[in-house]
Image 1 (cartoon, rainbow, N blue to C red):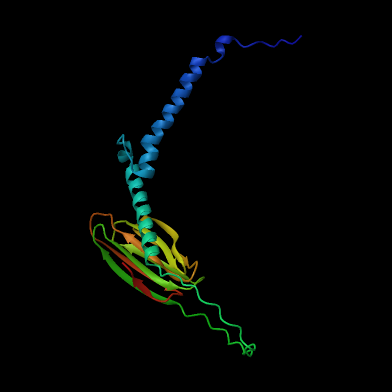
Image 2 (cartoon, rainbow, N blue to C red; image 1 turned 30 degrees about the vertical axis):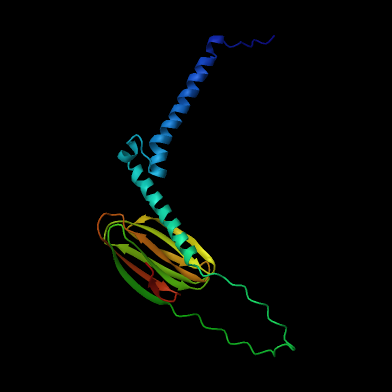
Length: 213
């Protein structure tokens, strides 16, 4: 015979205990949602705890960057020229003579350019460079101290918005490789409450820097 001992019924969780545990778990989840997730993601802080922990500021930056990206995309779509269909060309009577292929072009020499701008409180500015698909530039931009909201993106060739990165920093550097022929560059918004100066240095394969906003 097996000496299996049956558990004491008093050791098993009762229905009321299970309900109480479930209610506690739901309460903890709701508390985390209201006190942490909403302030950090959406800048909604009904309890005030997110402001004390710095989460509300994080959510405010995220929401501001998202709104600015949507405004940039809408403006680019509104200003994009309409594409008209072209009538097909009639066939030629005879094939064109084959021409000798042109010698391969040498890679363009790397260019270097620098621009410095000062943003008033709440002001947004944008600098872009004309680049062909696959071309790369190295860049570094730095402010005189305060952080700026930034959105690195491109547009052109039928594409109204292509993002490379966004955030809130006082300095950023890296390499930007054009995903298509068009304009590629940087947009900044000053939320620091005072004037901020930003200096951008770009080196590589591009066709000049231009301020758009």
